[in-house]
Image 1 (cartoon, rainbow, N blue to C red):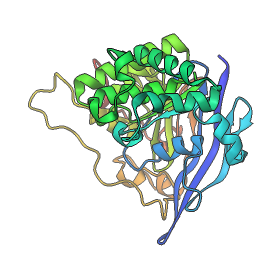
Image 2: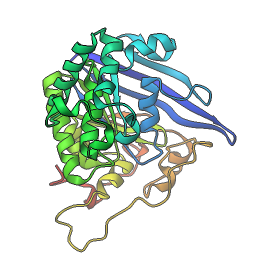
Image 3: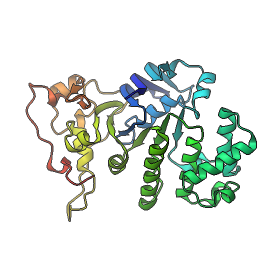
Image 4: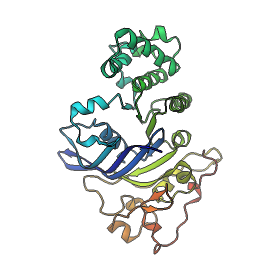
Length: 339
């Protein structure tokens, strides 16, 4: 498939009163046309920072892309001016943010907020933009779109507001859609509806999706590939089946083992002990070493390179070195019926 986005050796830092926070360290991910990629990990692992760096939405005064390339159709977004980036943002790459209520302007009608991007990027007349806004509301299954296009965000439920945010993101037929925790603020039933909607829209529009989430259930239902992120680095990547059924990194084992399972009656929910590393002083070796039950001295002293397990599956762990002791994943991390 044709590669549409290629992030190479991305390093992002924040400058704070306490010092330099190295939030993203040497991240490599790619996205093919029409593909869905999930980036998973705990809060603070660097997922949202990576997505905002791709969109160039990080605060200019306090953050910096220190190194790396963000290649979108051959253009390095990291080197574009703000004016050049404005032409791409919203038209060719769009983003769905976590909380729809803070993404929508409470003083503007839903229709005007959808029309804004259409008029800016596609030079449509007011009437044409309104007709397109109504069609987009139909596309995301908002009932009575001709009436609701004139209503305000507070007149919509949480699930419907998220549908509106998706409509705004899809307004200009973007080639890449970044969804940053799109279902976190929603209840389980509405989450399922939003995921079904995104899957359906991807089939209809062919938009490539990057899904940022900590919910592995969401990953199983929507994504073709998974990148597991920890401590500002990618520790494992692979197809969804490879990561769920043949995980190789102890952090991935921990994430899978902490998933609630329907058949696990009266069993305590497992958790990963400890806390993520302080990225003001990032560890020299594997970022997960301090929390890993299988850590060796080499894990603390040296960062492991990614080991290629197949053409689509890589993991950065010293346990994959031929000299390391053989360690099997815990039983709870072996997914049988999680998907």
